[in-house]
Amino acid sequence: MASAQRESREASPLPGEHAAAIERLQQLIRIPTVSRSDESDTDWAPFRRFLEVLPELYPLVHAKLERELVANYSMIYRWRGREDGNPGVLMAHYDVVAATDDGWQHPPFSAHVSGSADDAVMWGRGTLDDKGSLAAILEAVEASLSEGFTPKNDIYLCFGHNEETAGDGARQIVDLLEARGIRPGFVSDEGGAIVEGIFPGVDDPIAVVGVAEKGIMTLTMTVDQDGGHASTPPRQTATVRLARAIVALNRTPFPGRFTATNIEMIRTLGAHARGPLRFAFTQLWLTKPLLLSLFGRLSDETRAITRTTQAVTMLQGAAAENALAERATAVVNIRVAVGSSVAEAVAHVKKAVNDERVSIAVERPSEPSIVSPTTGPAWNLVRTSIERTYPGTIVTPYVMLGASDSRHFTRISDFVYRFSPFEMSADERGTLHAKNERIRISTWLRGIDFYREIVAGL
Image (cartoon, rainbow, N blue to C red; front, side, top):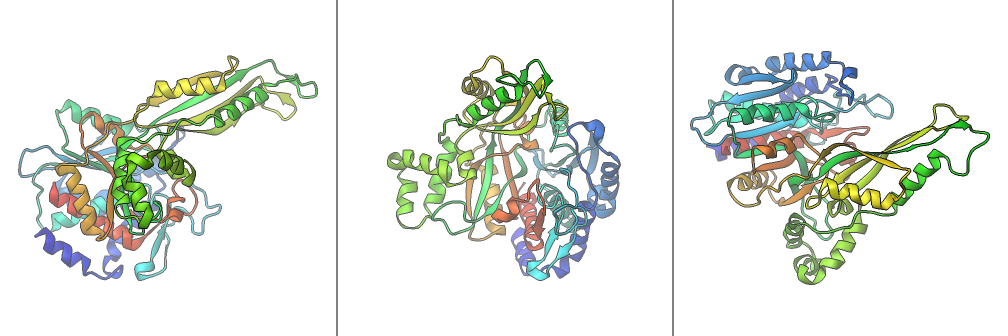
C-alpha cells in the first residue's frame, strides 16, 4: 500500500496541486516566532498565535492526536498505534533567529514565493531552520490520517519552542517522557541534508545523516584591570592583553583526528569517487594521514568535521571611546568533537592562552552526544526512506557540527538521527541564521514524502 501511495505521489505535478500545503507553510513562516537568549526579551504573542493556528491548518492532526503543552510553548502530540512496541519520535522546532528586512531580497517574514513549477522558491526565516520540517511532518501526518492510516506503534511529534536559545523546551519534553517510562526506538530531528559537491571526486547527491552531534559550550575570557583616561594608556591595556589571548588561541587550533563515524563516511563516499580518489578514500590504512591533512585544508566544513572548533563571537571593552577598559571580555563558542570532552577543550584553551591575568569561565557546557548505530531497523528506516524519496542518492552517516534539540533525547533513546529531508545547495546552506533564507518548493514537497515513508515504517 505504501509503495502504491508513493508512486501516486511521485506522479503528481509540482507545485500547482499542492497550493493548499504551500499556503499553510506560508502562514507559519509569517508568524515571527523569534526566540531570544534572554527570554524576558521574547515577544510571546507570536508563539501563542502559532499554537492557535495549528489546529486551523491541520484539523485531523488535532482531532485524532493528543496534544500536550510543555514549558508553556513546546508541544507533544501522541499518535496512538496498533501495538505496544517502542514508539517513534519526529522532532522539529518552530522558534527562529532574529531577522530584519536589511539585505533580504524579500522580507524575512513575508513567505514570498518566486518562480514557478520546479523553480519555485519560498523566502523566509524558518523555511530551512526549522518550520519547513515541522510543516512537512504535519502535512505527512494529516495526509496519512485522511487515508485512515494508523501506525504500528505510537508516534510522538515533539516540537520545541526555544531550540535556538536555551533548548529547555525539548529538555522538559524528555523529562516528561522519561518519567512515563517511554524509550523511543527511533528519533528523527533536523540535521544533515541532501547536498552536492562537498566531497572531492563524488558527483552524486549525498544524504548526510547525523548519527551524533558535537558538544557545545561558551567560554568567557575576561581581563580585569585599572582603567583611566585613554590619553595616558599603560604599556598593556586590558583590551591588548585580551587581544593577545585571542590571537594565541587562534594560532593553536585543536588537533584533528578521524572518529569511527568519519571513517565510515569516507569509506561510504569513497566507494563512489572517481579514479585515483577512490583508492585514496578506500585504502585508509595507507592514506589516512594524508586525508586528515586534506580535510584540514579543503573547506571550513571538512576542517570542522575532524576537530573541536573555537570561534570568538563577541567582544566588549570600555563604555566610552576615550576611556580605558576596566574589564575586557571575549565570548568563545566551542564545539566539542565526538571522542573529546568539555574538560579536554577547556584545558586546551587555558594552555593556548597561558596568561593568568586572563580568567576563563565555562557556561552552559554540553558534552558530545552518543553515536547512534548505522545498522539495524532504525538506521535502515532512515536510509530506505531517503533512497525512495531521492533515488540515486548516497546515504552516509556523519557527525553533525551544530547542536540540536535531539541531544536531549539521547538520554532516553540510542537511536537518534539528525536529517532535514531537503536538497540544500552550498548557497542555501549559507543562509541558515543569515540573510535570504529560502527553500525550493519542490524539495519541501519531497520532504513531506520522506516523512510519509517514515510514518509508514514506524
